Image (cartoon, rainbow, N blue to C red; front, side, top):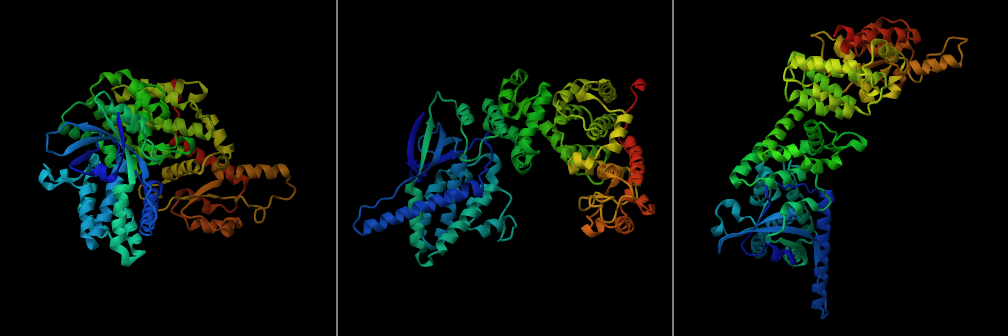
Length: 611
Protein backbone atom coordinates (compact mmCIF):
# COMPACT_ATOMS: atom_id res chain seq x y z
CA UNK A 1 0.00 0.00 0.00
CA UNK A 2 0.99 3.61 -0.52
CA UNK A 3 -0.26 6.11 2.09
CA UNK A 4 -0.23 9.92 1.91
CA UNK A 5 -1.73 12.74 3.97
CA UNK A 6 -3.39 15.24 1.64
CA UNK A 7 -5.87 18.10 1.87
CA UNK A 8 -9.13 18.31 -0.05
CA UNK A 9 -7.54 20.52 -2.72
CA UNK A 10 -5.11 17.71 -3.47
CA UNK A 11 -7.71 14.96 -3.10
CA UNK A 12 -10.09 16.46 -5.66
CA UNK A 13 -7.76 18.41 -7.96
CA UNK A 14 -7.23 17.65 -11.63
CA UNK A 15 -9.24 15.30 -13.75
CA UNK A 16 -10.25 12.63 -11.28
CA UNK A 17 -13.10 10.27 -10.61
CA UNK A 18 -13.58 8.47 -7.28
CA UNK A 19 -16.16 5.78 -7.97
CA UNK A 20 -17.91 3.69 -5.31
CA UNK A 21 -18.37 0.08 -6.49
CA UNK A 22 -21.82 -1.43 -6.31
CA UNK A 23 -20.86 -3.99 -3.67
CA UNK A 24 -20.51 -1.15 -1.15
CA UNK A 25 -23.41 -0.42 1.16
CA UNK A 26 -25.57 2.67 0.49
CA UNK A 27 -24.92 6.05 2.07
CA UNK A 28 -25.86 5.75 5.76
CA UNK A 29 -24.34 8.71 7.61
CA UNK A 30 -26.75 10.67 9.81
CA UNK A 31 -27.07 14.10 11.34
CA UNK A 32 -26.41 13.43 15.02
CA UNK A 33 -23.75 10.79 14.62
CA UNK A 34 -21.71 12.21 11.73
CA UNK A 35 -22.85 15.48 10.08
CA UNK A 36 -23.05 17.59 13.22
CA UNK A 37 -19.62 16.47 14.53
CA UNK A 38 -18.09 17.14 11.10
CA UNK A 39 -19.69 20.60 10.89
CA UNK A 40 -18.47 21.41 14.41
CA UNK A 41 -14.95 20.35 13.41
CA UNK A 42 -15.09 22.46 10.24
CA UNK A 43 -16.24 25.58 12.12
CA UNK A 44 -13.45 25.07 14.66
CA UNK A 45 -10.96 24.88 11.78
CA UNK A 46 -12.43 28.06 10.25
CA UNK A 47 -12.01 29.87 13.57
CA UNK A 48 -8.41 28.71 13.83
CA UNK A 49 -7.71 29.99 10.32
CA UNK A 50 -9.37 33.33 11.14
CA UNK A 51 -7.22 33.58 14.27
CA UNK A 52 -4.09 32.80 12.30
CA UNK A 53 -4.97 35.41 9.65
CA UNK A 54 -5.58 38.01 12.36
CA UNK A 55 -2.28 37.20 14.07
CA UNK A 56 -0.40 37.42 10.78
CA UNK A 57 -2.02 40.78 9.97
CA UNK A 58 -0.79 42.10 13.31
CA UNK A 59 2.78 40.98 12.67
CA UNK A 60 2.52 37.72 14.58
CA UNK A 61 3.44 34.26 13.43
CA UNK A 62 -0.01 32.80 13.28
CA UNK A 63 -0.71 29.70 11.22
CA UNK A 64 -3.74 27.47 10.77
CA UNK A 65 -3.78 23.94 12.15
CA UNK A 66 -4.89 21.16 9.78
CA UNK A 67 -7.82 19.00 10.83
CA UNK A 68 -7.74 15.29 10.04
CA UNK A 69 -11.11 13.72 9.11
CA UNK A 70 -10.11 10.12 8.48
CA UNK A 71 -8.77 7.77 5.85
CA UNK A 72 -9.88 6.55 2.46
CA UNK A 73 -8.70 3.47 0.58
CA UNK A 74 -8.52 3.73 -3.20
CA UNK A 75 -7.69 1.37 -6.05
CA UNK A 76 -6.41 2.77 -9.33
CA UNK A 77 -8.14 1.74 -12.56
CA UNK A 78 -5.91 1.95 -15.67
CA UNK A 79 -7.02 4.64 -18.13
CA UNK A 80 -5.74 6.25 -21.31
CA UNK A 81 -3.48 9.28 -21.27
CA UNK A 82 -5.42 12.54 -21.19
CA UNK A 83 -8.63 10.98 -19.85
CA UNK A 84 -10.23 11.27 -16.43
CA UNK A 85 -8.23 9.21 -13.92
CA UNK A 86 -10.58 6.81 -12.13
CA UNK A 87 -10.13 5.12 -8.77
CA UNK A 88 -12.44 2.75 -6.94
CA UNK A 89 -13.30 3.74 -3.38
CA UNK A 90 -12.62 0.60 -1.35
CA UNK A 91 -13.28 2.34 1.97
CA UNK A 92 -14.25 5.89 2.92
CA UNK A 93 -17.18 6.44 0.58
CA UNK A 94 -19.35 7.86 3.38
CA UNK A 95 -16.69 10.45 4.18
CA UNK A 96 -15.94 11.38 0.57
CA UNK A 97 -19.63 11.68 -0.36
CA UNK A 98 -20.33 13.88 2.67
CA UNK A 99 -17.40 16.19 1.89
CA UNK A 100 -18.57 16.57 -1.71
CA UNK A 101 -22.08 17.48 -0.54
CA UNK A 102 -20.66 20.02 1.93
CA UNK A 103 -18.59 21.59 -0.86
CA UNK A 104 -21.68 21.69 -3.10
CA UNK A 105 -23.81 23.31 -0.37
CA UNK A 106 -21.19 26.05 0.08
CA UNK A 107 -20.92 26.51 -3.69
CA UNK A 108 -24.68 27.01 -4.00
CA UNK A 109 -24.44 29.90 -1.52
CA UNK A 110 -21.31 31.29 -3.18
CA UNK A 111 -23.05 31.57 -6.56
CA UNK A 112 -25.14 34.40 -5.09
CA UNK A 113 -22.29 36.49 -3.68
CA UNK A 114 -18.86 35.32 -4.81
CA UNK A 115 -18.54 33.97 -8.33
CA UNK A 116 -14.80 33.32 -7.99
CA UNK A 117 -15.26 31.17 -4.88
CA UNK A 118 -18.13 29.33 -6.57
CA UNK A 119 -15.86 28.51 -9.53
CA UNK A 120 -13.08 27.36 -7.22
CA UNK A 121 -15.50 25.08 -5.40
CA UNK A 122 -16.81 23.68 -8.67
CA UNK A 123 -13.27 22.64 -9.59
CA UNK A 124 -13.29 20.39 -6.50
CA UNK A 125 -16.58 18.70 -7.37
CA UNK A 126 -16.66 18.51 -11.18
CA UNK A 127 -14.49 17.56 -14.13
CA UNK A 128 -14.55 19.55 -17.38
CA UNK A 129 -17.57 18.61 -19.47
CA UNK A 130 -15.32 18.34 -22.53
CA UNK A 131 -13.59 15.32 -20.96
CA UNK A 132 -16.74 13.57 -19.76
CA UNK A 133 -17.89 10.64 -21.88
CA UNK A 134 -21.38 11.11 -20.40
CA UNK A 135 -23.14 13.69 -18.22
CA UNK A 136 -22.41 11.78 -15.01
CA UNK A 137 -18.66 11.63 -15.61
CA UNK A 138 -18.38 15.29 -14.61
CA UNK A 139 -18.83 14.34 -10.95
CA UNK A 140 -15.56 13.71 -9.15
CA UNK A 141 -17.19 11.41 -6.61
CA UNK A 142 -19.76 8.92 -7.87
CA UNK A 143 -21.69 6.94 -5.22
CA UNK A 144 -22.93 3.37 -5.37
CA UNK A 145 -25.81 2.47 -7.69
CA UNK A 146 -28.77 2.96 -5.36
CA UNK A 147 -27.64 6.46 -4.32
CA UNK A 148 -26.93 7.89 -7.76
CA UNK A 149 -30.32 9.35 -8.65
CA UNK A 150 -30.52 11.38 -5.44
CA UNK A 151 -26.87 12.42 -5.65
CA UNK A 152 -27.48 13.66 -9.20
CA UNK A 153 -30.49 15.71 -8.02
CA UNK A 154 -28.41 17.22 -5.20
CA UNK A 155 -25.58 18.21 -7.52
CA UNK A 156 -27.94 19.73 -10.10
CA UNK A 157 -29.98 21.75 -7.57
CA UNK A 158 -28.83 25.24 -6.61
CA UNK A 159 -30.58 25.43 -3.23
CA UNK A 160 -32.48 23.37 -0.69
CA UNK A 161 -35.77 24.77 -1.98
CA UNK A 162 -34.95 23.81 -5.56
CA UNK A 163 -34.01 20.29 -4.49
CA UNK A 164 -37.26 19.86 -2.56
CA UNK A 165 -39.31 21.30 -5.42
CA UNK A 166 -37.76 18.72 -7.76
CA UNK A 167 -39.32 15.96 -5.66
CA UNK A 168 -42.56 17.85 -4.89
CA UNK A 169 -41.76 18.44 -1.21
CA UNK A 170 -42.51 21.64 0.76
CA UNK A 171 -39.61 23.93 1.66
CA UNK A 172 -39.79 23.14 5.39
CA UNK A 173 -39.19 19.42 4.81
CA UNK A 174 -36.64 17.89 7.19
CA UNK A 175 -36.58 14.35 5.83
CA UNK A 176 -36.78 13.88 2.08
CA UNK A 177 -36.60 10.11 2.35
CA UNK A 178 -32.96 9.66 1.36
CA UNK A 179 -29.86 10.27 3.45
CA UNK A 180 -27.88 11.90 0.63
CA UNK A 181 -30.67 14.42 0.15
CA UNK A 182 -30.96 14.93 3.91
CA UNK A 183 -27.21 15.51 4.09
CA UNK A 184 -27.46 18.32 1.56
CA UNK A 185 -30.44 19.88 3.39
CA UNK A 186 -28.48 19.83 6.64
CA UNK A 187 -25.31 21.42 5.26
CA UNK A 188 -27.09 23.95 3.03
CA UNK A 189 -29.10 25.18 6.03
CA UNK A 190 -26.08 25.04 8.35
CA UNK A 191 -24.02 27.16 5.94
CA UNK A 192 -26.93 29.60 5.62
CA UNK A 193 -27.20 30.03 9.40
CA UNK A 194 -23.46 30.53 9.70
CA UNK A 195 -23.36 33.16 6.94
CA UNK A 196 -26.31 35.02 8.48
CA UNK A 197 -24.37 35.47 11.71
CA UNK A 198 -22.50 38.31 9.94
CA UNK A 199 -24.42 39.25 6.76
CA UNK A 200 -22.02 42.07 5.89
CA UNK A 201 -19.11 39.64 5.64
CA UNK A 202 -20.76 36.90 3.58
CA UNK A 203 -18.20 36.92 0.76
CA UNK A 204 -15.20 37.06 3.11
CA UNK A 205 -16.61 34.30 5.31
CA UNK A 206 -17.33 32.12 2.28
CA UNK A 207 -13.77 32.56 1.03
CA UNK A 208 -12.39 31.67 4.46
CA UNK A 209 -14.64 28.60 4.60
CA UNK A 210 -13.40 27.56 1.15
CA UNK A 211 -9.74 28.03 2.12
CA UNK A 212 -10.32 26.02 5.28
CA UNK A 213 -12.00 23.14 3.45
CA UNK A 214 -9.50 23.10 0.60
CA UNK A 215 -6.30 23.47 2.62
CA UNK A 216 -6.91 22.62 6.29
CA UNK A 217 -9.21 19.59 6.08
CA UNK A 218 -7.00 16.57 5.52
CA UNK A 219 -7.38 12.91 4.65
CA UNK A 220 -5.04 9.96 4.66
CA UNK A 221 -5.32 8.29 1.26
CA UNK A 222 -4.20 4.70 0.95
CA UNK A 223 -3.54 3.57 -2.62
CA UNK A 224 -3.71 -0.19 -3.11
CA UNK A 225 -0.93 -1.75 -5.13
CA UNK A 226 -1.25 -4.68 -7.50
CA UNK A 227 -0.89 -7.43 -4.88
CA UNK A 228 -3.37 -5.92 -2.40
CA UNK A 229 -6.80 -7.58 -2.03
CA UNK A 230 -9.48 -4.84 -2.05
CA UNK A 231 -12.20 -7.17 -0.67
CA UNK A 232 -10.02 -8.17 2.28
CA UNK A 233 -9.23 -4.51 2.99
CA UNK A 234 -12.92 -3.60 2.84
CA UNK A 235 -13.87 -6.35 5.31
CA UNK A 236 -11.50 -5.03 7.98
CA UNK A 237 -12.52 -1.36 7.85
CA UNK A 238 -15.54 0.53 9.22
CA UNK A 239 -16.93 3.94 8.40
CA UNK A 240 -16.90 6.53 11.17
CA UNK A 241 -19.36 5.45 13.83
CA UNK A 242 -21.27 3.13 11.46
CA UNK A 243 -19.98 -0.45 11.65
CA UNK A 244 -20.39 -2.72 8.68
CA UNK A 245 -23.27 -5.14 9.02
CA UNK A 246 -22.66 -8.84 8.39
CA UNK A 247 -24.94 -8.43 5.37
CA UNK A 248 -22.64 -5.68 4.03
CA UNK A 249 -19.72 -8.10 4.21
CA UNK A 250 -21.74 -10.83 2.47
CA UNK A 251 -22.62 -8.40 -0.33
CA UNK A 252 -18.97 -7.44 -0.70
CA UNK A 253 -17.91 -11.09 -0.69
CA UNK A 254 -20.37 -12.14 -3.40
CA UNK A 255 -19.88 -9.23 -5.78
CA UNK A 256 -16.13 -9.30 -5.15
CA UNK A 257 -16.07 -12.85 -6.55
CA UNK A 258 -18.06 -11.84 -9.61
CA UNK A 259 -15.91 -11.18 -12.67
CA UNK A 260 -18.63 -10.15 -15.10
CA UNK A 261 -18.59 -7.07 -17.34
CA UNK A 262 -19.86 -3.94 -15.59
CA UNK A 263 -23.18 -3.76 -17.43
CA UNK A 264 -24.04 -7.39 -16.65
CA UNK A 265 -22.94 -6.99 -13.03
CA UNK A 266 -25.15 -3.92 -12.64
CA UNK A 267 -28.09 -5.80 -14.16
CA UNK A 268 -27.59 -8.71 -11.75
CA UNK A 269 -27.32 -6.30 -8.82
CA UNK A 270 -30.59 -4.57 -9.81
CA UNK A 271 -32.37 -7.93 -10.03
CA UNK A 272 -31.01 -9.29 -6.74
CA UNK A 273 -29.23 -7.35 -4.00
CA UNK A 274 -30.55 -4.02 -5.20
CA UNK A 275 -33.78 -4.77 -3.29
CA UNK A 276 -31.92 -4.50 0.02
CA UNK A 277 -30.46 -1.12 -0.92
CA UNK A 278 -33.55 0.37 -2.56
CA UNK A 279 -35.74 -0.59 0.42
CA UNK A 280 -33.04 0.01 3.03
CA UNK A 281 -35.45 1.77 5.41
CA UNK A 282 -37.19 -1.59 5.75
CA UNK A 283 -34.19 -3.89 5.62
CA UNK A 284 -31.96 -1.88 7.98
CA UNK A 285 -34.67 -1.18 10.54
CA UNK A 286 -33.73 -2.61 13.93
CA UNK A 287 -36.28 -5.23 14.99
CA UNK A 288 -36.64 -7.70 17.84
CA UNK A 289 -36.46 -7.16 21.56
CA UNK A 290 -33.64 -6.80 24.05
CA UNK A 291 -30.40 -8.61 23.26
CA UNK A 292 -32.00 -10.09 20.13
CA UNK A 293 -32.38 -6.68 18.43
CA UNK A 294 -30.78 -6.67 14.98
CA UNK A 295 -31.17 -4.90 11.63
CA UNK A 296 -33.83 -6.82 9.74
CA UNK A 297 -31.45 -7.70 6.89
CA UNK A 298 -29.10 -9.49 9.29
CA UNK A 299 -32.00 -11.41 10.84
CA UNK A 300 -33.15 -12.43 7.38
CA UNK A 301 -29.66 -13.59 6.40
CA UNK A 302 -29.45 -15.53 9.68
CA UNK A 303 -32.78 -17.27 8.97
CA UNK A 304 -31.89 -17.89 5.32
CA UNK A 305 -28.52 -19.41 6.16
CA UNK A 306 -29.99 -21.47 9.01
CA UNK A 307 -32.64 -22.87 6.67
CA UNK A 308 -30.02 -23.57 4.00
CA UNK A 309 -27.56 -25.32 6.33
CA UNK A 310 -30.13 -26.73 8.80
CA UNK A 311 -27.81 -25.51 11.54
CA UNK A 312 -28.19 -22.76 14.12
CA UNK A 313 -26.29 -19.68 12.96
CA UNK A 314 -25.44 -16.87 15.36
CA UNK A 315 -25.60 -13.33 13.95
CA UNK A 316 -22.12 -12.51 15.24
CA UNK A 317 -20.77 -15.45 13.18
CA UNK A 318 -23.04 -14.91 10.19
CA UNK A 319 -20.42 -13.72 7.71
CA UNK A 320 -17.85 -16.33 8.69
CA UNK A 321 -20.47 -19.08 8.39
CA UNK A 322 -21.54 -17.80 4.98
CA UNK A 323 -17.97 -17.81 3.65
CA UNK A 324 -17.24 -21.26 5.06
CA UNK A 325 -20.36 -22.96 3.69
CA UNK A 326 -19.12 -25.49 1.17
CA UNK A 327 -22.35 -25.75 -0.82
CA UNK A 328 -22.56 -21.99 -1.32
CA UNK A 329 -18.90 -21.86 -2.35
CA UNK A 330 -19.52 -24.39 -5.14
CA UNK A 331 -22.51 -22.56 -6.63
CA UNK A 332 -22.24 -19.80 -9.23
CA UNK A 333 -22.46 -16.39 -7.57
CA UNK A 334 -25.47 -15.34 -9.63
CA UNK A 335 -27.40 -18.46 -8.55
CA UNK A 336 -26.69 -17.69 -4.88
CA UNK A 337 -27.77 -14.06 -5.32
CA UNK A 338 -30.99 -15.01 -7.10
CA UNK A 339 -31.92 -17.51 -4.41
CA UNK A 340 -31.23 -14.96 -1.67
CA UNK A 341 -33.51 -12.50 -3.49
CA UNK A 342 -36.31 -15.07 -3.79
CA UNK A 343 -36.12 -15.83 -0.08
CA UNK A 344 -35.93 -12.12 0.76
CA UNK A 345 -39.15 -11.49 -1.17
CA UNK A 346 -40.74 -14.42 0.67
CA UNK A 347 -39.54 -13.12 4.04
CA UNK A 348 -40.93 -9.65 3.35
CA UNK A 349 -44.26 -11.17 2.28
CA UNK A 350 -44.65 -12.44 5.86
CA UNK A 351 -44.83 -8.85 7.10
CA UNK A 352 -47.23 -7.91 4.32
CA UNK A 353 -49.48 -10.83 5.22
CA UNK A 354 -49.50 -9.79 8.88
CA UNK A 355 -50.81 -6.35 7.84
CA UNK A 356 -53.40 -7.60 5.35
CA UNK A 357 -56.95 -6.30 5.89
CA UNK A 358 -59.25 -8.09 6.28
CA UNK A 359 -56.92 -10.86 7.39
CA UNK A 360 -56.74 -14.28 5.78
CA UNK A 361 -55.96 -17.35 7.89
CA UNK A 362 -52.29 -17.03 6.94
CA UNK A 363 -52.44 -13.34 7.91
CA UNK A 364 -53.68 -14.27 11.37
CA UNK A 365 -50.87 -16.81 11.71
CA UNK A 366 -48.15 -14.26 10.98
CA UNK A 367 -49.82 -11.59 13.11
CA UNK A 368 -49.98 -13.96 16.07
CA UNK A 369 -46.44 -15.20 15.49
CA UNK A 370 -45.23 -11.60 15.53
CA UNK A 371 -47.02 -10.98 18.84
CA UNK A 372 -45.37 -14.07 20.33
CA UNK A 373 -41.96 -12.74 19.18
CA UNK A 374 -40.76 -16.17 18.09
CA UNK A 375 -38.14 -15.48 15.42
CA UNK A 376 -36.73 -19.00 15.74
CA UNK A 377 -39.66 -20.35 13.70
CA UNK A 378 -38.69 -18.34 10.61
CA UNK A 379 -36.04 -20.67 9.11
CA UNK A 380 -38.67 -23.42 9.01
CA UNK A 381 -41.21 -21.04 7.46
CA UNK A 382 -38.73 -20.03 4.76
CA UNK A 383 -38.12 -23.70 3.96
CA UNK A 384 -41.85 -24.51 3.99
CA UNK A 385 -43.14 -21.56 1.98
CA UNK A 386 -40.32 -21.58 -0.55
CA UNK A 387 -41.84 -24.90 -1.70
CA UNK A 388 -45.56 -24.45 -1.03
CA UNK A 389 -48.04 -21.66 -1.65
CA UNK A 390 -49.26 -20.05 1.56
CA UNK A 391 -52.89 -20.33 0.40
CA UNK A 392 -52.72 -24.06 -0.29
CA UNK A 393 -55.20 -25.79 2.09
CA UNK A 394 -52.61 -28.33 3.26
CA UNK A 395 -50.07 -25.59 3.88
CA UNK A 396 -52.63 -23.60 5.84
CA UNK A 397 -53.32 -26.71 7.91
CA UNK A 398 -49.59 -26.97 8.61
CA UNK A 399 -49.49 -23.36 9.78
CA UNK A 400 -52.55 -23.95 11.98
CA UNK A 401 -50.81 -26.89 13.66
CA UNK A 402 -47.69 -24.80 14.26
CA UNK A 403 -49.80 -21.99 15.72
CA UNK A 404 -51.69 -24.39 17.99
CA UNK A 405 -48.40 -25.89 19.17
CA UNK A 406 -46.97 -22.44 19.98
CA UNK A 407 -50.06 -20.91 21.61
CA UNK A 408 -50.79 -23.94 23.77
CA UNK A 409 -47.19 -23.95 24.99
CA UNK A 410 -47.41 -20.20 25.65
CA UNK A 411 -50.56 -20.56 27.76
CA UNK A 412 -48.97 -23.49 29.62
CA UNK A 413 -45.80 -21.43 30.15
CA UNK A 414 -43.53 -24.07 28.62
CA UNK A 415 -39.95 -23.09 27.86
CA UNK A 416 -39.11 -21.68 24.43
CA UNK A 417 -35.38 -22.39 24.77
CA UNK A 418 -34.43 -24.96 22.21
CA UNK A 419 -36.98 -23.80 19.64
CA UNK A 420 -34.13 -22.93 17.27
CA UNK A 421 -32.90 -26.52 17.01
CA UNK A 422 -36.45 -27.93 17.18
CA UNK A 423 -37.72 -25.99 14.15
CA UNK A 424 -34.55 -26.63 12.16
CA UNK A 425 -35.13 -30.36 12.67
CA UNK A 426 -38.71 -29.83 11.47
CA UNK A 427 -37.36 -28.72 8.06
CA UNK A 428 -36.68 -32.39 7.29
CA UNK A 429 -40.47 -32.87 7.21
CA UNK A 430 -40.87 -30.51 4.25
CA UNK A 431 -41.68 -32.47 1.09
CA UNK A 432 -42.53 -31.40 -2.43
CA UNK A 433 -46.12 -32.53 -1.78
CA UNK A 434 -47.95 -30.17 0.63
CA UNK A 435 -50.17 -33.01 1.93
CA UNK A 436 -47.14 -35.15 2.75
CA UNK A 437 -45.52 -32.14 4.41
CA UNK A 438 -48.58 -31.54 6.58
CA UNK A 439 -48.79 -35.19 7.62
CA UNK A 440 -45.10 -35.30 8.51
CA UNK A 441 -45.14 -32.03 10.47
CA UNK A 442 -48.24 -33.03 12.43
CA UNK A 443 -46.80 -36.45 13.23
CA UNK A 444 -43.52 -34.89 14.37
CA UNK A 445 -45.32 -32.45 16.67
CA UNK A 446 -47.58 -35.12 18.15
CA UNK A 447 -44.84 -37.68 18.76
CA UNK A 448 -42.35 -35.30 20.35
CA UNK A 449 -42.08 -35.95 24.09
CA UNK A 450 -39.07 -33.73 24.82
CA UNK A 451 -39.68 -30.71 27.02
CA UNK A 452 -38.98 -28.35 24.13
CA UNK A 453 -41.29 -30.17 21.72
CA UNK A 454 -44.30 -31.25 23.75
CA UNK A 455 -47.69 -30.23 22.31
CA UNK A 456 -49.98 -29.81 25.37
CA UNK A 457 -53.13 -31.94 25.41
CA UNK A 458 -56.56 -30.47 26.19
CA UNK A 459 -56.49 -31.28 29.91
CA UNK A 460 -53.21 -29.44 30.50
CA UNK A 461 -54.25 -26.59 28.20
CA UNK A 462 -57.54 -26.15 30.10
CA UNK A 463 -55.94 -26.34 33.54
CA UNK A 464 -53.49 -23.54 32.73
CA UNK A 465 -56.11 -21.56 30.79
CA UNK A 466 -58.38 -21.40 33.83
CA UNK A 467 -55.76 -21.14 36.55
CA UNK A 468 -52.73 -19.28 35.23
CA UNK A 469 -52.65 -15.48 35.85
CA UNK A 470 -51.65 -14.87 32.25
CA UNK A 471 -51.81 -11.08 32.58
CA UNK A 472 -49.00 -11.21 35.14
CA UNK A 473 -46.95 -13.91 33.46
CA UNK A 474 -46.92 -12.83 29.80
CA UNK A 475 -46.13 -9.67 27.88
CA UNK A 476 -49.18 -7.54 27.07
CA UNK A 477 -48.76 -8.17 23.33
CA UNK A 478 -49.09 -11.92 23.89
CA UNK A 479 -52.16 -11.55 26.12
CA UNK A 480 -53.76 -9.21 23.59
CA UNK A 481 -53.03 -11.71 20.82
CA UNK A 482 -54.94 -14.45 22.67
CA UNK A 483 -57.92 -12.18 23.35
CA UNK A 484 -57.98 -10.90 19.76
CA UNK A 485 -58.00 -14.48 18.50
CA UNK A 486 -61.04 -15.20 20.68
CA UNK A 487 -62.77 -12.06 19.44
CA UNK A 488 -62.03 -12.91 15.81
CA UNK A 489 -63.48 -16.40 16.27
CA UNK A 490 -66.70 -14.94 17.71
CA UNK A 491 -67.21 -12.46 14.88
CA UNK A 492 -69.70 -13.07 12.11
CA UNK A 493 -68.75 -12.10 8.54
CA UNK A 494 -70.89 -8.97 8.95
CA UNK A 495 -69.29 -7.86 12.22
CA UNK A 496 -67.18 -4.69 12.06
CA UNK A 497 -63.48 -5.52 12.15
CA UNK A 498 -61.96 -4.93 15.55
CA UNK A 499 -58.58 -4.58 13.86
CA UNK A 500 -59.63 -1.35 12.16
CA UNK A 501 -58.38 1.75 13.95
CA UNK A 502 -56.50 1.86 17.22
CA UNK A 503 -55.09 -1.21 18.93
CA UNK A 504 -57.62 -2.52 21.47
CA UNK A 505 -56.84 -2.22 25.16
CA UNK A 506 -57.02 -4.99 27.76
CA UNK A 507 -59.49 -4.44 30.61
CA UNK A 508 -59.89 -6.38 33.87
CA UNK A 509 -63.60 -7.01 34.51
CA UNK A 510 -63.06 -7.45 38.23
CA UNK A 511 -60.66 -4.54 38.69
CA UNK A 512 -57.16 -4.79 40.13
CA UNK A 513 -58.17 -2.07 42.62
CA UNK A 514 -61.26 -3.94 43.83
CA UNK A 515 -61.33 -3.25 47.58
CA UNK A 516 -63.64 -0.19 47.58
CA UNK A 517 -66.51 -1.34 45.34
CA UNK A 518 -65.96 -5.11 45.23
CA UNK A 519 -65.68 -6.24 48.89
CA UNK A 520 -65.32 -9.91 49.77
CA UNK A 521 -68.41 -11.50 51.38
CA UNK A 522 -68.47 -11.26 55.16
CA UNK A 523 -66.45 -13.90 56.91
CA UNK A 524 -64.07 -14.67 54.02
CA UNK A 525 -60.42 -14.73 55.04
CA UNK A 526 -56.98 -13.90 53.66
CA UNK A 527 -56.97 -17.05 51.55
CA UNK A 528 -60.06 -15.79 49.70
CA UNK A 529 -58.27 -12.50 49.11
CA UNK A 530 -55.22 -14.30 47.68
CA UNK A 531 -57.49 -16.39 45.46
CA UNK A 532 -59.25 -13.28 44.13
CA UNK A 533 -55.95 -11.53 43.42
CA UNK A 534 -54.89 -14.56 41.42
CA UNK A 535 -58.03 -15.22 39.38
CA UNK A 536 -58.50 -11.57 38.45
CA UNK A 537 -55.44 -11.93 36.14
CA UNK A 538 -56.76 -15.08 34.41
CA UNK A 539 -58.26 -15.03 30.92
CA UNK A 540 -61.81 -15.37 32.26
CA UNK A 541 -61.53 -11.90 33.82
CA UNK A 542 -59.96 -10.15 30.82
CA UNK A 543 -61.63 -8.51 27.86
CA UNK A 544 -60.93 -6.07 25.04
CA UNK A 545 -62.17 -2.49 24.73
CA UNK A 546 -61.70 -0.02 21.92
CA UNK A 547 -60.31 2.51 24.42
CA UNK A 548 -59.30 2.29 28.09
CA UNK A 549 -61.86 3.18 30.75
CA UNK A 550 -60.94 6.00 33.08
CA UNK A 551 -59.81 4.84 36.52
CA UNK A 552 -63.11 5.86 38.16
CA UNK A 553 -65.21 3.82 35.72
CA UNK A 554 -62.75 0.92 35.71
CA UNK A 555 -62.87 0.55 39.49
CA UNK A 556 -66.62 1.20 39.85
CA UNK A 557 -69.18 -1.31 41.00
CA UNK A 558 -70.27 -3.88 38.38
CA UNK A 559 -73.57 -2.18 37.50
CA UNK A 560 -71.74 1.02 36.56
CA UNK A 561 -68.83 -0.70 34.88
CA UNK A 562 -71.12 -2.94 32.82
CA UNK A 563 -72.79 0.17 31.37
CA UNK A 564 -69.40 1.61 30.40
CA UNK A 565 -68.35 -1.67 28.80
CA UNK A 566 -71.62 -1.64 26.85
CA UNK A 567 -70.40 1.44 25.03
CA UNK A 568 -67.81 -0.85 23.43
CA UNK A 569 -70.42 -3.27 22.06
CA UNK A 570 -68.54 -3.73 18.76
CA UNK A 571 -66.60 -6.45 20.62
CA UNK A 572 -68.50 -9.72 20.40
CA UNK A 573 -66.83 -11.13 23.50
CA UNK A 574 -68.55 -8.42 25.54
CA UNK A 575 -72.12 -9.12 24.39
CA UNK A 576 -72.80 -11.82 27.01
CA UNK A 577 -71.39 -9.58 29.74
CA UNK A 578 -74.35 -7.25 29.31
CA UNK A 579 -76.62 -9.97 30.74
CA UNK A 580 -74.51 -10.63 33.84
CA UNK A 581 -76.15 -9.16 36.94
CA UNK A 582 -73.07 -9.73 39.08
CA UNK A 583 -69.38 -10.41 38.60
CA UNK A 584 -67.28 -12.51 40.94
CA UNK A 585 -64.96 -15.50 41.07
CA UNK A 586 -67.69 -17.91 39.94
CA UNK A 587 -68.52 -15.82 36.88
CA UNK A 588 -64.82 -15.53 36.06
CA UNK A 589 -64.48 -19.33 36.15
CA UNK A 590 -67.59 -19.84 34.02
CA UNK A 591 -66.48 -17.31 31.43
CA UNK A 592 -63.00 -18.85 31.39
CA UNK A 593 -64.53 -22.25 30.60
CA UNK A 594 -66.68 -20.74 27.85
CA UNK A 595 -63.67 -19.01 26.30
CA UNK A 596 -61.64 -22.20 26.59
CA UNK A 597 -64.13 -24.06 24.38
CA UNK A 598 -63.59 -21.34 21.80
CA UNK A 599 -59.79 -21.55 22.23
CA UNK A 600 -59.88 -25.34 21.82
CA UNK A 601 -61.48 -24.86 18.41
CA UNK A 602 -59.05 -22.11 17.36
CA UNK A 603 -56.01 -24.12 18.46
CA UNK A 604 -57.00 -27.80 18.22
CA UNK A 605 -54.67 -30.69 18.94
CA UNK A 606 -55.58 -33.90 17.13
CA UNK A 607 -55.45 -37.25 18.87
CA UNK A 608 -52.29 -39.14 17.94
CA UNK A 609 -54.27 -42.38 17.74
CA UNK A 610 -56.43 -40.90 14.98
CA UNK A 611 -53.52 -39.65 12.85
